[in-house]
Amino acid sequence: MKEKPDDIFERLKNGETIPADDPDAYKLREETYASKELLDRMNQSSDPSEIRNILGMLTGSTIHESTAVFTPLYINYGKSIDIGANVFINFDCIFLGLGGITIEDGVLIAPRVSLLSEGHPIHPADRQSLVPGPIHIGKNAWIGAGSTILPGVTIGENSVVAAGAVVSQDVPPNTIVGGIPAKIINSITI
Image (cartoon, rainbow, N blue to C red; front, side):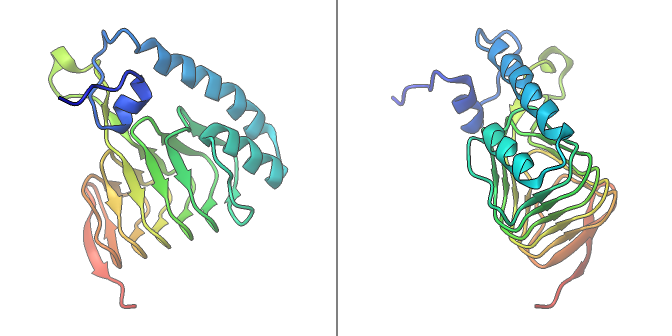
């Protein structure tokens, strides 16, 4: 029988729902408050190199020099966020990263985009639990202004999410989606 991981962050990464009364749930809030200290510094900076360096501290990785981030950016947990090269993240985005977020090379993220890799169960008795769902954004995708990507969604390579869309299902490569909930609008011929 496989042993259950002890670390609450590893359990989230493995897709485990964390109940509200989990003895390690406090670690989630502690990490969020620690992230906020770095975010406050990052969001006050206008130096692209400093912004990338602080974002690297948040994610525990090196952010490529070709990646540009216009602050403010809000992240609750960065260690499960991977950001590729030549990525552009515009102003006022929100990344809830406990469920994991992968942003591949060449991705464009417009202002006020929300990437929400975590949610809660529907049933009121369980609603305080945390349900992770990794988000994966493929190469050269463009996420339009004010759109929301929900837990567990993959955005295919070269795809476009129209402004204001709420994406609750996977988007195939080379596809344009829009609306609430997002539906396929068109294909992109490559």
